[in-house]
Amino acid sequence: MIMLFANKIRRLREDQQLLQRQLAAALEIDTPMYSKIERGDRPAKRTQVVALAKLLSIDETELLTLWLADKVTEVLDDEKELAGKALEIVQKNQKH
Image (cartoon, rainbow, N blue to C red; front, side, top):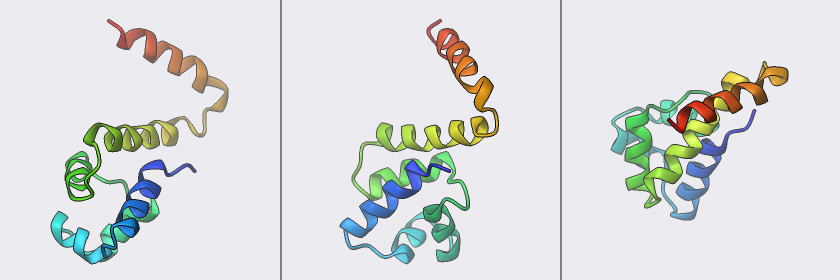
């Protein structure tokens, strides 16, 4: 499973020499729950993604896009034969 969002926040946190417990406290969750988000074992909430973007000094749209891409990938992962066609339909309907 691809974990674009989880990998990105882990890299940013490590690059900025922040501890998981620091980000967990800022998100008002416990460290084990934050750790699960960073490992990709638990999905982050949209509000948490927005907060992490601010905390990690990254563009909110970039982080939200990675988060959403992971969600789409998870849904389509078991539907490889239909995924491409489904994405085409979604893309076509998003333009309106």
